[in-house]
Length: 232
Length: 403
Image (cartoon, rainbow over all chains, first blue to last red; front, side):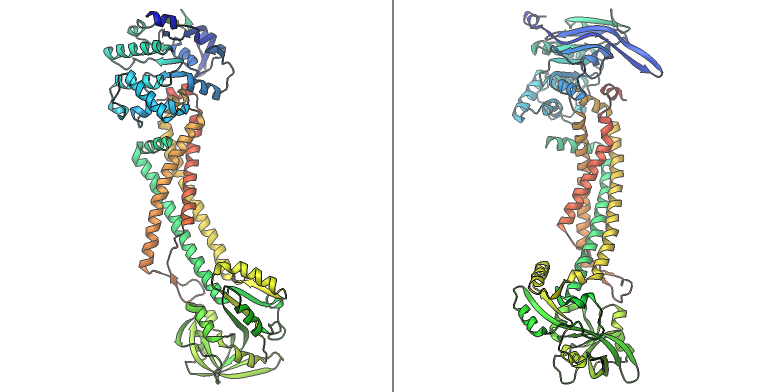
């Protein structure tokens, strides 16, 4: 990590305190997380690792505000969000959280430009500002000139770059990435991890990445290992 | 605009399915427009016939419309000539016609039959009634002929074995309660397309009828306006100016028109509802499949900050796009059918109780097209709402895990 990035790491963007979460699997309750405390700071890239079923995705979902804990508290940028309504959580995600998925999850009928523009449309950004930010984001991920292509016409690595551009175009405080290299070859995966790290540091976003990929953990500022729903 | 563009792109994801939904919508739209257009043509035709028959506004004694007569012309209108002259002077008036409704026996010397007669101002009355009074032989009689002439219905002429030029005798009860008779010559034979009316119909010169009935009264004064749309205003104005008289519009007296309209409104209204329900089912099915296929995408869009309501709105736009496409196609089909029928000159068979058919034509009504188009689009959007509202509120983690 360079010096500028180090100084950029400040107060936690997301903080979870003693959170627990259980799921019903058939008639049995499965305890996915047991009193886990976790935080990620601005400009910091944190890897969540652990075996399958260890609770990585559950913790990632709680960080990304797309799931709610059974117990414990959450704060986003210092603001407690326990008890927030679904609409309020959606508003926070819209403004502050970017997502990168393993399967890219781009909208197939939208062009690259439209996919990246979508979060800005939700925010009501002006057309001129949208265009500038979309082109900047695509340029940043190395996809300038690909604006009119459809996702199906791109390679896996290019699609993931589009997904990263979509996550970053609104300058989120937090980027949630779930196995972002899971569907990519080694060389492309390295590029994607490097890109995520650079962008997180540049834009002072906290990045939380769930991964099985050891190559990825080497690029992260911090690695949190989960085993049986607890941080080991 | 962007959202509508995205909706259109989403519609084209599964073209065959979207086309099928559009086809169903188009057929439904075309059926409603053609059916309703036919009803509108029928209404227009019946309105025209009714207004021509009675006049746009009819004036008479109150008792003429509300009560029975013990003696002929008991409820007749006195001083009709002066009143008609004053009415003719009103702006917007095309003609004012005096009429006497009377009945009696008609005889050819060998046999007699009951007739229902109308004493009219011949040339003007026949001209104004126009096409509905179809002469099958002879011609209208002239007013004030030395030897009174009549026009008889086709079936009555057959019953009386009368031809143009035949001599017949009209026998009627006078206003004094006595019987009076007048010899008449048949100048023409007509049909109004209703055999039961043709069997009794007699038109005679109003002056001759007054002489027969020993009266100078008339039954009604029919006011024909230059513009039918002025009827209500003219009726209100005349009612205010002549409070001692009953004033009725053609619509008040058009019992047949109102019955047909009430019937057709129900038939074609029900057809419209059935078509909209079919469109609703077709669209719900189509969009339901689209929503199910895109569950993961819904989860993604929810995760990145789309409100459930916004997702539902987007699906409603998709529904509206499919419905709008189908509605436009249906309108095109209905429009083409309307034009084709104008050239095809097809005839509907005679309705029950009538002897003549009528043209199969369909009216083009921009208001109807807009109303049906809006209804189809609204129903399609509602179908999309039904199909997407649950999926849009599904937990995001579940939606993202959907395979």
